[in-house]
Image (cartoon, rainbow, N blue to C red; front, side, top):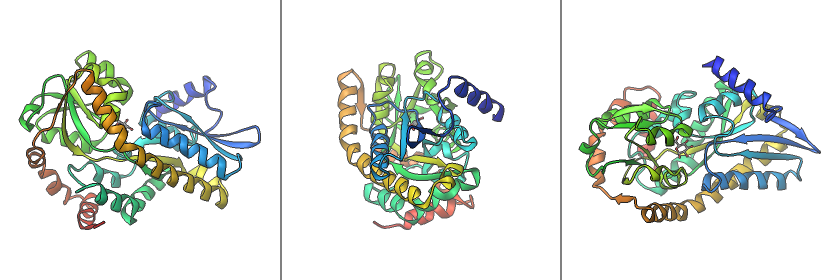
Length: 328
Ligand code: GCU
């Protein structure tokens, strides 16, 4: 894996895209920030807002340049580049961070949050902050969460009950929790990087995948999968990440600007989320996708065992219990 990342880093350097994760351009210091989503996505807009706020606060002396659409690699590859210092920052799904800090696994538990207020209380409170700080020994520091709504199945044949998933091949992120969830539904889990998923769906490598409405829409996966079943099985946030080498090289004032800009961008993005979800559902329905609203209780019951199993995990179990006890 390290060899692959070194090769990837070498390619990125050879293309002259990155001189360093944080280079100097003109007067200011410039941080490269790469991610996999489309430029129409609210999470991308959140990062653009972050860059604007950072430039404004620092008077242009500290800036971020955003590279969208997976141009600098998959989420795992970007995290590895950030660890090595070839990239300053990235934005990934919390699921992919499971491989870097086990605390992130808790977000992979199904039906974790009771509602948006519960989710906000957890992410904005001590538990959320603790999880962001968890990957520091791996040279990564979570800066803020972006809203990624809830994930639901999209497939080539309708999923109306959990039984309809039996035997289907479903794409999962590079995440042991996502793998366990799909297995618990009786489907077979196939890990595929997000950037390779359109082709995999088209070629029938998998029968379906799962994601939130804006990502289902903006990835154009709806061109291949004509059924979207809103079972909303997981609520996995996105995470803005900075390398600790870069973070530690900033002055306390620069760290303050960066953290404030990130916090403001998280609020901005959260405000865009609900409208972007409705727009995306309308757009895919117009394009001929059948939106199914199944009985969620049946889906919840089908995978309830995962919470029981998590209790045996010394990190995930206590976090799951603390989250359940959190009140807004
Ligand atoms: C979400 C998330 C992305 C991630 C994607 C995936 O859309 O925002 O960061 O890449 O899920 O399923 O891979």
